Picture 1 (cartoon, rainbow, N blue to C red):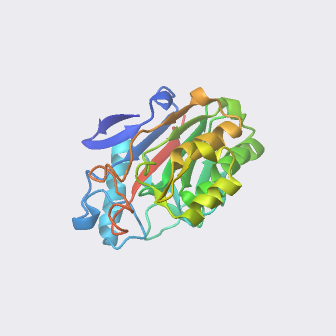
Picture 2: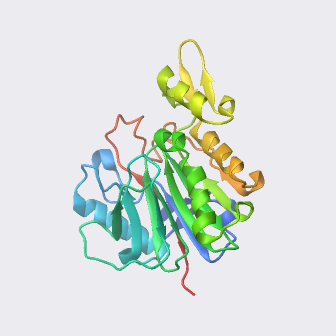
Length: 270
């Protein structure tokens, strides 16, 4: 990943997706918004205790910087599960207090529709973008430990293949800033769930007598490879949000009292 400044707003973008001019994508930071105190300053979390008018203003700031229509920003309240929203038609905009169009209970969104922007909100969980430049299909995935355990990344790739005809070997993936293996300690019960259910867990679960750590980024990367993605088509951010809580919101570092940054993606209208 590398950092870019657009209209004075800092973003992070994936290097190997940057060359696809039909695709726009960006990961926000916590800088450049108007929210105060715990949510300073670009808080995009619709379910936080920040003032709604601050959150709405922050969404407007991002939409102007990335130059997309906020009326067709597609998001969802996230449930840490494996429900996937497939959008094969441009949705009808409805007036709402929440910016754009917000669905309920989806942790992954897939579309082939140009002119809409899809997003997920995060603060330690793993943000993932999947893009097929052949089929012109994009997906954004929110993979916390529960979503990773339920293999939401594998299921998203399967849906891209089933519903949109994507070939996994054509898909390029980006794994964004998230809590790293350095900071994501879990109890033995959670660690054992991973080792019992997920393949190749020895690569992303480290258990000692005193503690257990899980590398959620590596777990999702392995899910991609098991789904047929080429390893060279997967770019992984080395940024730990907990270590870098001055740049990104971190739910764990800030003990739950924090905002949300976001991953945005869309296809330009021709």
